[in-house]
Image 1 (cartoon, one colour):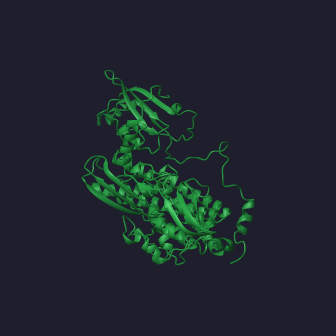
Image 2 (cartoon, each protein chain N blue to C red):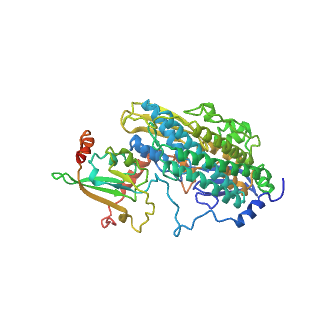
Image 3 (cartoon, rainbow over the protein chains, first blue to last red):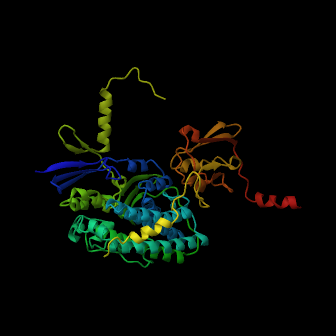
Length: 400
Length: 140
């Protein structure tokens, strides 16, 4: 006999609200379903009301962890539209911050993976070391989380010699610590036993379901925008795409630790080879009519922004495809045939950022369970219809 | 593979100082170009409204108090401010009329207490060659 258990939208095992429905047979999951839309924020519509400059800060706030990724992806697209090229020093600083962000995101994820596997001391140690890179980011940009480094046509803050030395010093400590974690991952039998063989996703499934980022790379698919379609400075840097063939959560841990080590190399290359010159060029306030698409390898996978301009100082359309959305179909496959106790671990292993990915509203009838996806205009029409028929409340007063 | 590979590291940390700071009693130093609270130097503001136009959080308001006297009022809503310092970047005057300081302890029990306002007379932008010519004057 099979049961259906709902997990979420609010659940202690989930860090962000999402609704999962598991059909279980005993302890084993036979079918999984996911429902999006609980955390819909209307961000794309809001972007149409704001100017090109204001939207940098809006897109930065799509996500709290890969904030620089979304802002960079947006800025890349706007620069394509405006046909401006940032100076080389500006680009180097922009992608230096990108790599530092990847380090902080992967260290954060390693901690979360340790926590979900019940290895809480690992979680505390990685998060302590993450403070080193957070402090470096704060030193460079002046902010700890939303760095606000990007502007259209370059970056907003320069790096001086003292900061370069501090970055290199921090990277040395971080590399030593990461190598130690790599050894722990390979040697701590209880940790390895908990994550090995959990959440299997074969190479063919990863290709079929269009998995992105470390999830695809852990299934042996060497998919990385930085290598396949090198943007800005990545064709000048020397790095490898890290893959693993184990296809499980262990592979995702290994891929992320190896990517950390690659990122340290890239940071050192960029700091040492930082070219001289300006950091920013002046950007026009309006963009020509047209459309642009930009791809960016965020810590979680490929991030895509599409922008359409109508010649004014505001975008006509901004479409965001966050990496988590690309990984949802693969997650459903990973969950099948797993145990209920593995749900948080498997779900955390794609490094989900739910608020990045929410872009649709689904209405579910409470009586019949019927589902319908509604458009914004339909919603507005329904709202108007409803308010038209309600009687005017005579005694209602503005509460403030 | 060995049992409890993490144990030596754990034992070593028993004799180390904690990595955290006792916050209200001890404070970490903020970096030099930290983005704290924005403020205005009213004697420099030429009321071009660039900051008001570019603020992504719409936290800056500039309104005329008296058009004839060129008297203006600027309100910064610190409850809405996202500390991006775009207003400082947008400010066209030199030195900049919009500035950002390193204050970060902004909590208040009422959001209206976070409002800051300045009433000032609009500054006149000096023609550029006037500034270097002015300096040697006191020497001679």
